[in-house]
Image 1 (cartoon, rainbow, N blue to C red):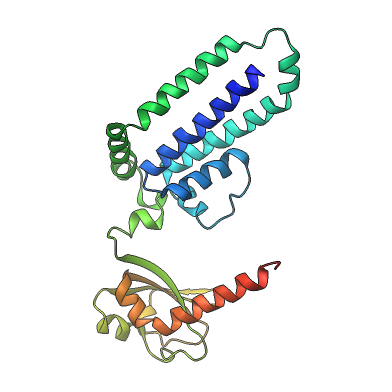
Image 2 (image 1 turned 180 degrees about the horizontal axis):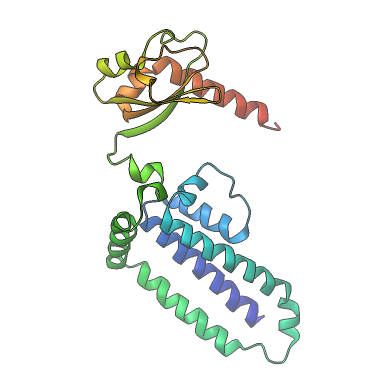
Amino acid sequence: MGFILLYSLIVLLVVEISVVLMRATGLDYDIARFQVVSLLTGTGFTTRESELILGHPVRRRIGIFLILFGAFSLAVVISCISAILAPDVHLVQLTVAATALLVVFVIVRSPSAGRFLSKRLSGTFRQSFQVHELSIREVLLLRENDAFVDVPLGEGSGLIGQTPDRLCDEFADLNVLLIRRGDVAIRDRRMRTPLEAGDVLYVYGDQGEIERRFARELREKRKSEEDEKQAASPV
C-alpha cells in the first residue's frame, strides 16, 4: 500500500510540475492541465488545443517526456500487485524520489520561479528556434487584438465578385494571406482574384476590423459549426 501511495504522489507531482511549465510557455491553466493529463494517459489528445502543443518547441519536449512517463507508469501499475507482495519494494528509494519531486514542485510554484520560467519559456526560446518551428500564435499573434481567421464565403456573401485588394484598402489593418479554392491555394494573384462562392479567405489583422468586415460570413461560419456540433451530439 505504501508503494501505491508514494507512486501516486510522484505521478501527481509530475502532473503539477508539467502544468506549471506549460503555463510558463503562455498556455491558459485549463488548457495546460487538460493537455498534460491527455499526454500522460494517452487519451483525449485529439482536441483543437493540441495544436498549441505540437506547434511549440518547448511544449513538444514536455509532451514527449509525459508520453514516455505515462508509458512507464502503465507498466508500474500493471506490476503493482506483484510489487506489493514482494518483500523488497524499495520504499526508501521511492520516498526519496517523491520528496525530490515535492521540493521541485514547491520551487516552481513560487512567484519568483514563475516569473523566471515565463521569461525563459515564453520569450527567449524564440531566439533559439526558427520561425517554421513555432505555432501561428507565437509568430503572428503578438498583440492582444491580433487575429488569424479563416473566412468561408457562402452563396449569399456580398464579397463574391470582389477582389481582396479592395477589402484591404478599405480596412488598413487587414491582410488576406491566402485564398483556398477547393484543393487550390491562391497566393501570388490573390489580391486581384475575383472571389467566388466556396472560397475560404485566410485573414490576418486587427480582430475588430475582421469582425466588422466579415460580420455576415463569420456569423454563418459559427452557425454552421454549431449545427455540426448538434448533428454530431448523441443527445
